[in-house]
Amino acid sequence: MLTNRERMLYYWELRTRTDHARRAWREAAHALAGNDVDAFWYHIETFLSGAISVANVLWPSSKSNAAQKRAEDLRAALGVGADAPDGLRDVRNGFEHFDERIDQWRVNSTDHNFIDTNISDPASLGGIDPGDIARNFNPDTSELAVFGKITSVDAVLSELAAVYAKVPKRY
Image (cartoon, rainbow, N blue to C red):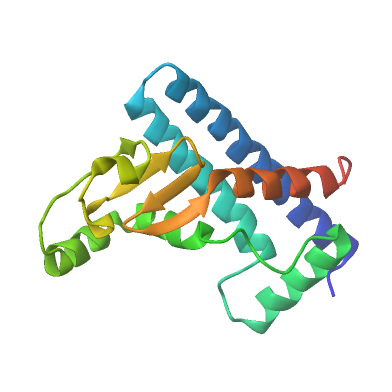
């Protein structure tokens, strides 16, 4: 069980990181609207960094008893569900360990097409194996993918907004 002081430290982290992730998404959306592809992907990485920081506090990948108990305590105090947004950790890890994903692509790809930093419905690429699409954002569905691992930006933003709204403004 967390003390009030300890809980407040985690609340501060949650509030800060949700704010950072949401700001990064606003900047990514602005870059997308301005057709600035490089800026879009830059802000997407920042968005994922903030979102995974929130996930690490509330839904840790660590199997340690202390991390799991802390997360349970915080989720109960905030009324947050037991599961992180689908695919978030896989997509973030794909960005974080992109070199390893390329290594896997080199071994597993049959056609060796390589589509990266694509912004479109991947079905519009016609005949390209989904495993050959490195990083993709589908603006029609808000799906963000890395080598076939997918998360919904809308779902992540919704969860971040819910967490942000539930964390007390005063600690």
